[in-house]
Image 1 (tube, rainbow, N blue to C red):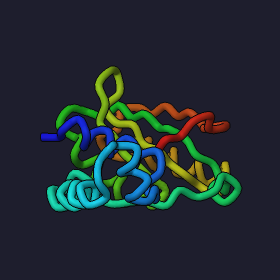
Image 2 (cartoon, one colour):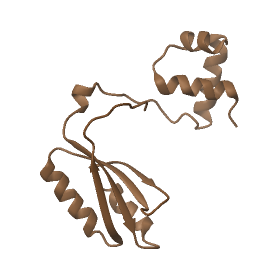
Image 3 (cartoon, rainbow, N blue to C red):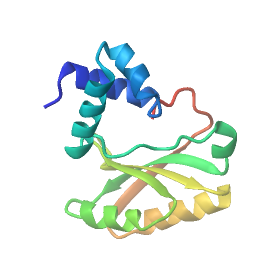
Image 4 (cartoon, rainbow, N blue to C red):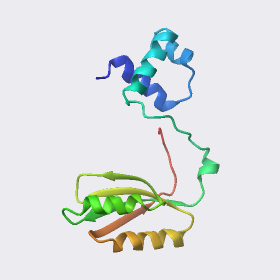
Length: 143
């Protein structure tokens, strides 16, 4: 169970995972040692699974990204998810509610590669239909 201070700490880390512990302590109104202990506890419990690098936009611009929604036959979702997980172009895969069953975030080097990848996804056993939305620009990304 997270305390309100744990949630606040995680919120600050979402904005900047490299923020110094002393700065976090000041913002939280806690001692540096207390914040370090909270971080260790959250990491040990697996609530903080890791820290990531967020690349500058000009480095991260390469290629094309798209959200791909997939409608999957009943009882085939696990098989389709395993097949998608083997594709290096898939950066994230989510189960969702609504008319689609899965949403994938895909990245390819070119429009041609995206087209081939979408054809492969649509031809997977169990996939009923796909719909894609190419990302034109990112207005906000707090990850």
